Image 1 (cartoon, rainbow, N blue to C red):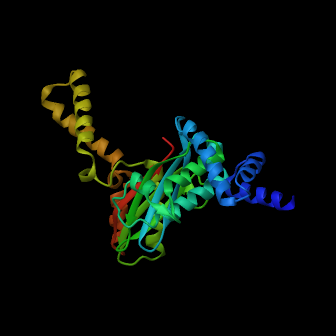
Image 2: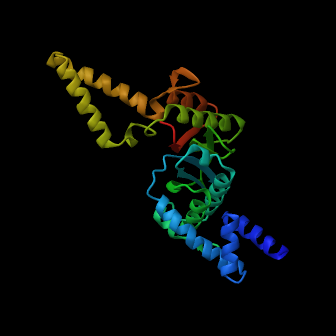
Image 3: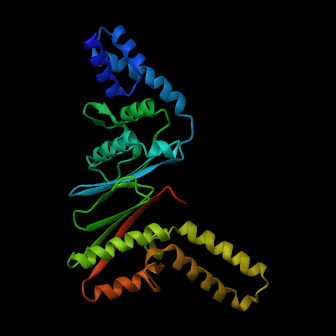
Length: 287
């Protein structure tokens, strides 16, 4: 009897299934742990498939790094309660560590879920956590950044753990000397990005369709206001410049010194230590 209790305990720790379900699984599979895990997974899969139709709007974002790449993953849950659960956060860390095995920066979510770790597909690990927590859980974002030639910094806002929270920003940069001052600037820029949510690094990188849409909207508004034809273009240019200053990182007012743009702050810093933003990622569950 003690052996059975111990087997049930082990099976529960592995699968997260209930006591009676584990007992039944062992009895129907001649007390074989591996067969019992498969038995419970098959039962769990049925529950997981039923839950997969439910919306997952909560969740968390995690960042993971090694010497060559950094990855950001967003995994959504149905409830905020599940996202704060230690079981879920440990699961995120496991998936995050697996993501560091990716060697192709164009690797898609589908490719990742179909890849294998320890002889199992990543998608199977998701099915396991769905059965264990009882909510629909989905990998919704995966960003991979190489930083072999660049320095990087990151910031986590509304954190559940040091590397997991509601908002994550990652900044790749170059500096003549990556000293404490450049590290501090990079960290502050990460905080700025989290707060100001720029759409791109600069105007050149801004989506062309977005620019045209904004231009059309502003032009219609100006014309409907009855402004004279000879000043419409001037007003439109002013509106678009305001749009660029709000939506592009380098043109935004710096949150720590609103009298200066981010570009101006970097230019001033570069007089003593050349600093350049290469790119950034912003992943947020907060609108």
